[in-house]
Length: 193
Ligand code: AMP
Image (cartoon, rainbow, N blue to C red; front, side, top):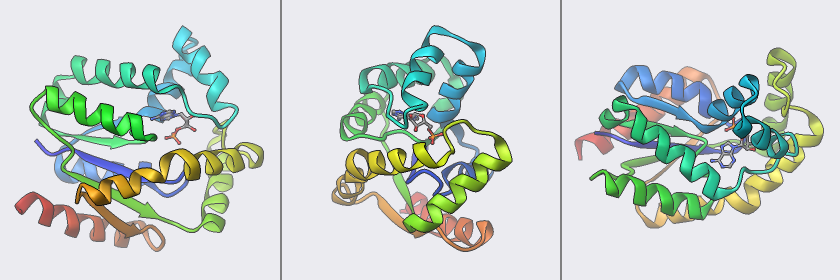
């Protein structure tokens, strides 16, 4: 089992690199943003709650998010081979909850990949994605809030994972392929250690 957290600001390339990583390592992909967007598209109760936060660029409350994750880990056999966590954890309490959920299953977070991209580039990428995909929260108003939330609530996780000796900071600019190669070099080493 090999569990990887892919970490970074909105627009840093987490989804794109996750796609490559699941193919390379046969990991089960959990994107909490995707899970929530599916609920919104299906008009579920959870989707309605999620939409009220996502449209404001805010995070879904920790207890709700942790319950969703625990449920996904419980219901999907495939998660036992290893998971790439994309967009979770996003707060310090979520990181502690993830350690706890994995420990309960006899496992842990093996590595954290942090995609590091400057603010100007992030805004450019997000607005471009909004135009190309029509994703509702990829607009200028929401982007600023999402980046503020990232700086105040999510970026402290970087120090936490550095302290745990798991953090691999990767330059998230350049071609998708060169970024992927750099990630793979780090993860292969981590797997063999
Ligand atoms: P993402 O697709 O990862 O950029 O997530 C889109 C939005 O979903 C975020 O801006 C949050 O509102 C919400 N979201 C996704 N993951 C989480 C999480 N782990 N905790 C709280 N909110 C989340």
